[in-house]
Image (cartoon, rainbow, N blue to C red; front, side, top):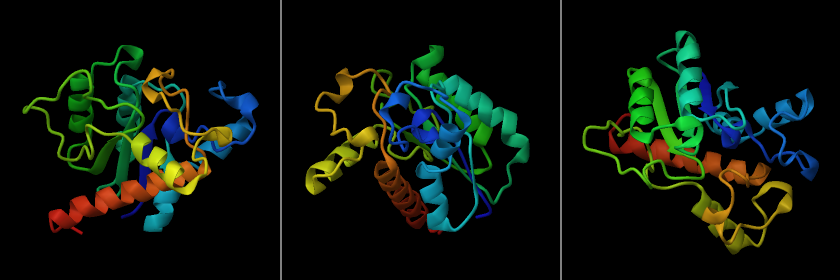
Length: 207
């Protein structure tokens, strides 16, 4: 692999690696915090696993249509040897249409080495996928990273959420995307992403 190129919303932008709670509701508080976030989320840890440089296009509050537009705008710079990872946002943010968005994304990424993940909300929870939708590279299409983070926190009695919050007991009743991982949480996400990608390639003999 040549480079890691990532796209997504606040969960890809690294919102939550900062320790000052005054920035909790700030999409872009200042250049320093912006760079701290984008340089220390799961893309950093995933690139370290593969020992390749990374470019993180994640940005807070991005909708799936906006994420797809980011992919389109930067597709000219992709290389066949790049690893491209897209972590989708809440599926209905910004007038998103889950089935249409996934179809558009996979069409744009066809021919590249890409993988798609959910962040905090399952894309198909409210709109079931169809047999006509190509989701072979959408790993865990009906799951998110939230249960894994919650379980780790319970098992280890340590916060994996921003500003040392403890796991939300009523996760689905909180505002979408209102709670983010912290530095440790993003590291755990990167570990899981690598595990899923490696398992995918091993199962197809393409490792």
